[in-house]
Length: 488
Image (tube, rainbow, N blue to C red; front, top):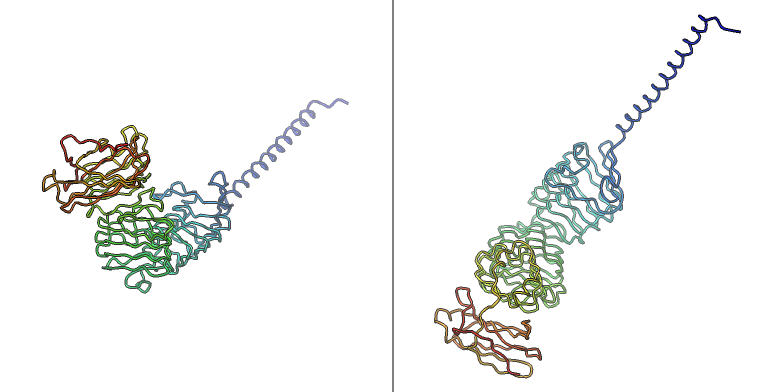
């Protein structure tokens, strides 16, 4: 049966409208679902994935409680404005931080300026707390540092004005400068003894008013960075055998300091620990397994690296011993009175800023060839090494007595002018045919001939004799210096 046209049109319009309404309902449902997802995700606490954050560390923040999870080290953040910190804009919300087991470090600047932070829970297994990690957390009153922690960074808790309860475990090996400065604990005079601040077995800061001899407390494990920084009155320091570390810049600029006795247990000395001292004799007992000293100069145990020279006020000319392979970073830094230095051919590298601040250097002598010097790895901030004397001064005014095991060298300084003989120092070196130093010695001239002994060997080829004069230069004894060639 055929439908009449008007009815058919009416029926078609009705069906069309129903479909339009159904499509609209379907669209609205999908729109509402999508909208609800957006609302849900906006409410859910932020949580960064491992790839978006760093390593295997994740974080979430809900109701003021920040939870750090995952495993391994937290990455370090920019210390100026923390622009790269993912929770930077939400720091004011944080009142409590819980770091879960498995996280092994708190990154630099991670929670700095969390002004409302009141409680921190650090996990067992945490190893290090970074620089400025909790700087400026003014509401933090106490912190329990786990026994597993070995390193606390510089300014880690600085400016935590209410922080009055602090523990530092015995196992901590390094404490950065100002780690606890301007905290309630730091500012409380009851926590100091004669002006010195210790936390547990760690010397945080020696009183700047201390004078004369200073004995670090027995049982002390760590001397913090800058502990004696700039003290102008301490003359002698004795460090007990219990100590394992001396922090960076610990004695920086202690201009009156003439003696430091390092304990047998010290196995870590920070950069620039003795920079700018000038008259310092460093003494290391032979039982120390990590360090040694010779003539008041600090070396590693095997004397293959010179670590600290701080004697330029009393010894402005220095002969680095043969066998030294590395001149350590900052080794001669701020030796303003250092006039000349002899570098043996054994040296293979010079560390960063090893001679920075040595404006008084007039001569640097290298006992190897110019070609050999080109193979030496010289780091930055060592401008005085741009002008090196590869020839040196070779003198023949010496007599030798050659034995099977030793060579005795007698040097006469009679050919020098009286003013050059005054306070002169003789330096003699025994070389093989390739120019490598086999043995060397030095001694002061006291108005008689200088006599020294060199260890003889089958490789011995020639001897060079140098004289340091009062102006810091090497002076020849004859107009035409020459090798003292050994007869075979």
